[in-house]
Image (cartoon, rainbow, N blue to C red; front, side):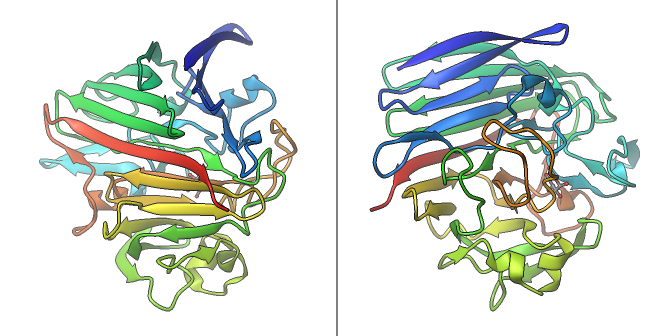
Amino acid sequence: MEVITDVIKVQDQQWKEFTLVNDNGMAVSILDFGGIITKILAPDRDGKLENVVVGFENYQDYLVNPGYFGALIGRVAGRIENAQFEIDGKPYTLPKNEGEHHLHGGNPGFHNTIWTVVPFENNEEVGLTLTLESKDLENGYPGNLRMTVTYTLNNDNAFTITYEGVSDQKTVLTSTNHSYFNLSGNLKSDIQDHQITLDSSKFVELDEELIPTGTILDVDNTTYDFRNGRPMKDGVTSEFKQNLVANHGYDHYFIFDHNKKESAIVREETSGRQLTVVTDQPGVVMYTSNNLSEGLKLRERDSAQYLGLCLETQGSPASIHHEGFPSIWLDKDEKYFAKTTFIFDTIE
Ligand code: G6D
């Protein structure tokens, strides 16, 4: 196992790209800019290593990155209604970077800031420790926040992301990674035939602006019931209101039942690749790149709708304005901890 470091010149900046390689040849490439995962090479059933995430051909395109490809997201992943909240009666207003609302931590956010990166390796794994200091009231968020994200890869083809944070004031925090997975390999096909299983019986209803209504819906007898596996395309062809609200797909927070160790399993029959997600998080935003615009030059091809599957494990920003949702409140000096493992293997 090894960590390979490359220097990437982007306009007047110098970024570093770190590639974690295990003994099976699986590799994960990560930038210090945004902690962005630019490539994951994973084997198919014949052992052929191919890229399984959406990423740009030209690195400078990560400077804009409207889809947040591969990026760490924070301080709050998802949407905060009306870009505001109150703590102990004191109002806080965040940038309205999507209509009247706040999306994905604002700008600058975790996704487009240079993180301090320290590689490491030991007998079990190779990895990176990324740290970031976010000042009090940066983008309107209270508290001086110190974030540490750890990426590790082991010889079981398990890639783990651990998030740790602490703030000197009460604040809100839920971070995630916004990789777009495509198990076909080198974006040979879109994700409509990916078979998805989610350990979830409830999901969060959205309004037309993709803002939680405050209602939690049952998946029973809907295209949101992934408990026994379902092809992603069911959400594309569905006339169910929530699939239409998401622009003919999924863009919703699923609350995990935590009945199983595996919170999500994704399979792609042609390649035989399988991705299993094990997480301590209470839920996941599953986004099926319904709004992925055309015309972006990706590593293997031009962008198109449904090219990647996002599994953004996190708390629910709806908890800011509604009771009964997985909380993203963080008390003064409370330790924030989140851990998600993506296990890549194959099926017969
Ligand atoms: C779209 O609604 C989706 C979000 O869920 C996603 O995170 C973003 O694109 C990249 O706004």
